Length: 256
Image (cartoon, rainbow, N blue to C red; front, side, top):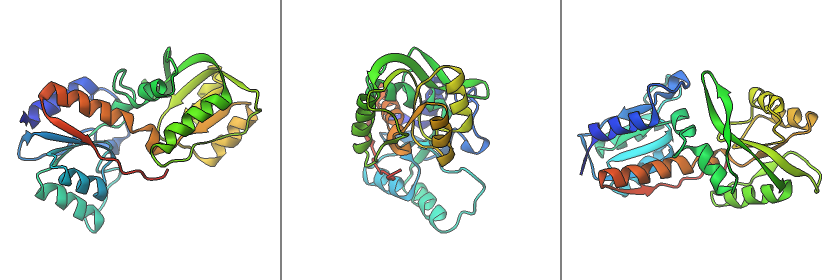
């Protein structure tokens, strides 16, 4: 049995929760307390009614998520009230880590996705305020083979990866990864400046595909959910070993 306060303090220090900039509404860190003890951790990409229910079924006392409880000011009524009530009644604490987890050098979504795709990251990418949350590197790989790797990974999480058009004989030599909603005007402009020919993201707006095509760049959209499953699992596994508690991954794919 672990002490919640000690566990949260460790997570905050390891993830640099108070140092890493993020969207104001992300509220990284402990978002919901419990009675103070943790014997089992559940990890999930999202805080939702489904992940709360699954964590309760797994008898967890702490739910670690990438996308937390609040992203805007909202009324605690309807589904928002019900999922919060279920967590409180079941003594389930909630800890969220968004950009701090994305960019972590060991447990980060970006570095772990690169490893899953057998890509060696040699630097960071994806500027946000004072930090870079993604990774980048070089290779000499047929883009069709890279896309196949991404598609295989995405299917594991019930997502279909897609890409902007490219010639069958095209090769990827400089790549970058920004998980989640990683395709934006800013990230594509950064990729162009830094000589990236293939950008791997979770998702992006339609105009980013046009922007990529006009600049002879390939964007592979692997799925928001699929690209952000690795960080919470790695973090929960690490914490479980350090604090001698069990853990479980609550897999609730969104299809996106």
